[in-house]
Length: 121
Image (cartoon, rainbow, N blue to C red):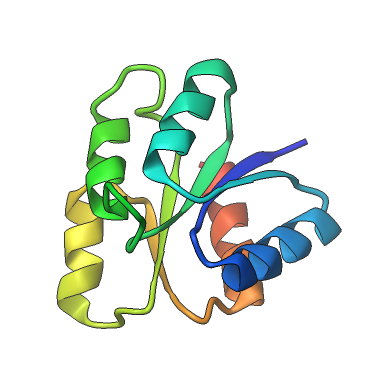
């Protein structure tokens, strides 16, 4: 079973992503801060991470960069989910190591297709 970590501080957004992924057969864990995500990633492995940009404390961009620079998390695909839809935001996310960028509100079909492509790589 594919395991996905959702890092999202909006309960409504987290519930939508969580429900969609669970119904599609994914194992899901949701956290609301970068700090909690790092603590969980020290103990558990995941096949993908859905990461919000605006989080309390550390930003999603910063967390993405940090995870890509650590041996135990460097190979995990990270999908940035953000309300920002500009090309510059997407390019910045990719420069931080993100594998994909989805604009909120996240289209769940697009999210599932994106995860499927990343799991095939």
